[in-house]
Image (tube, rainbow, N blue to C red; front, side):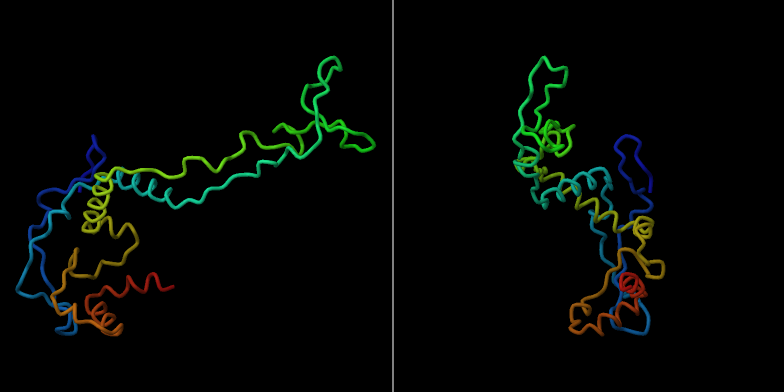
Length: 202
């Protein structure tokens, strides 16, 4: 794997791009045994890995699940306050009216005042959601699939794949007959992939 200085994409060398993938038996024997058959590696697994596009699409898609929030429109403006105007050698900020209490004459409404409103109160009509180009979303999915076929990147994510026979790991059609959880666990243990399941169990 090499990082392109121009696009930031992780390019896979021709030597690392395997044209064929071994097919392993799901149920035969106590350990993973390969069949005599191999299948062509789909071209999506050797596509350029554009981490910048994946990050951009993921960030903007998560914005589409945000819930609008705002402060109350009345917050900080529930005083009977009016400016004293000029000529009294004090600031023109509105001041609480009345008397007989320490609150009278104190500044109000402004964001610099005690019990005043915030600066630029938030509104619910902010542009919360983002439109994303369809081609960018497709490119992000392609890059994510290609990254899943690169063992260094998969290991960097914390997955325990050091003992599995191959990445990506392809099983024969017998795996489609699994109906019970204990059958799936047995297959994963046979392929030495169950340790990655136990990693998220705790």
